[in-house]
Image 1: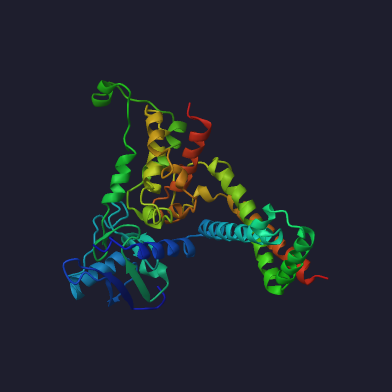
Image 2: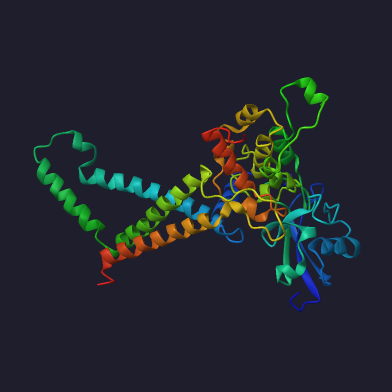
Length: 164
Length: 243
């Protein structure tokens, strides 16, 4: 039976369903962006912990070294030098966009799950528009996009001084 | 339509008794004003290829039999005019998230099993009353308006096919079943609120919905399952609101 697929096919189908939001309207874009931003923020968080752990000396931080102060200063300087390039700066700007979007859109979803800001059930007429994506929901989605763009511009300016 | 006198239909073909490998077949179909995708498929079956399998019945968006994926979106073939697609090329595939029986016919067993799971009927505490009702159950217009939108469901499975959560979690009941759960939960004649909550109050149940709203976008009857699911969640978090 064609429906009995192997694991890889299921994964491909799942990713296709997650990551191809067009044709389904605004809320599906919101869903896809929320998932992508969630995954990116999680990966960033892991990388941030690794980086911070490296700066403070990794597992050796639990052992008092005689040259602890000098060691920490050297590792800190090396790490900052390694991270100080336009590629990481641009990455942080994108992280800024995703964090801002995920936060505001997450609050919108949080409220929607409480049933707040949704329309009331109505008898559907021809050309019916779903009340689940009410004007309030749409406004909040666009507010999250606007906030995310602001964060993106702000971080780009902070790193590259484009607005100066 | 866009000036075309014929369209090219690229149709998904799959026959389990044959090689078992899905493939696509192209058909050129002459069009007429008001022609639907179902009309085009019937034309193929009658004139070009009688081996093509399709499922349909009422041809007027009432029975929900002819659901399929048309140009990437779950739609009813009888409710989709070729002119509205604004293309001379139409890709027709079976509904997603469901196994395929043959060609464009999806197996709806799991869909109906999930519908059955939420007990889509009125339940009375009094068993004798349940089996042999003695009187009419009166409702005000306001009480009716709370659920009547969700009673428009024709069980076409378009919402189930559009749901991104169903594609990754086969234990998720899906938008149709959850909307019907709310439809009976909020009905003042029903007396099984706690039982209905127990059915979906788990990790694969109502909390699994991510509010992608695709179900509501594709529903041909305007049922808005996403709204029903969020309202049901509110009921479960803050307690019954029906009076």
